[in-house]
Amino acid sequence: MHEQMTFYLNQIVEQNPLINCLTNKVTTNFQANALLAIGASPIMTDEPDASPLVSAQSQAIVINIGSPFNQDKMEAIELSIKAANDKQIPVIIDPVGVAALSNRLTYIEHLLSEYEIAAVCGNYSEIAALAGAKSNGKGVDGGNPEGEMTDHLLKVANLYQTVVVATGKTDYIANQTAVYAHQYGDALLGYVTGTGCVATTIVAAFISQAPTPADYLTAATLATGFYAWCGGRAVQLTTGPGDLPIHLLNQLYEHSVKANNKKTSDKELTNLTITQERMSSND
Image (cartoon, rainbow, N blue to C red; front, side, top):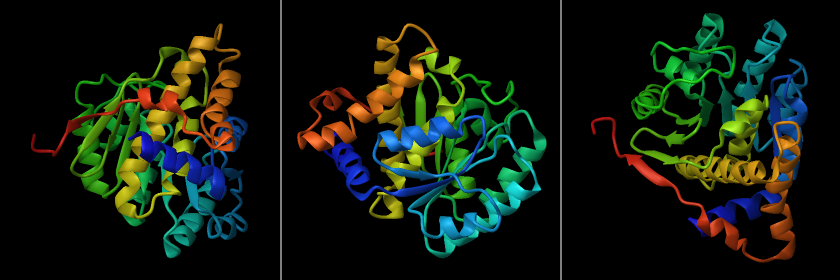
């Protein structure tokens, strides 16, 4: 796994992939800086006339339906996804708020049904909502108990033929046949808005470097593991949520761009482990 992680991190730094983010205005700056920190090139173009053109030139696009969620943004989203699908550019969706707002849930279900989506990344409540389960979602950051998450992930993955990521204390990553997990997250990350949105952009950067669509699960698994691991290290260095984003960005940079510049293997990453939870929906 260490060799795979190194491959993806080096590819991102060396290829400098363009990631177009049609995203949440609350967290735009945080997401852009996180992508820059790992060597990617962010662009936040969400106008209906410009975004499809930019998306067609990107290596991946992120669709985040956080504020604002209006007709102009929905038009830009669909035009951009069509442009990406036409060129087989991976699309990663962050279904912000679907556990609390039925109109957002309906819209995301439409996108997942109508288009080719490489991955959908959300918190427990959002993934549970997509699986048809009742949720205790609170705003955009509400959480659902972990107990049935593997079932929910496999259901969504099979229903929409996509990779599914559920972030929380334990991160779960699944395709139609397997579920992986790691426990590098920390509760303090939940006190900073946008940490989930950033996770989705990191997944997009990794997926942009996947050799084939069959590698999207591996890319998403490595991305979430790397991000959560950096988050855990950032928590150890911080005194509270105020300076956590600074330490998180520094850790992302330290173990990607800076490590690549040194042209040496980041041996600290050898301690990162990921477990396989399930092999099929029939287990």
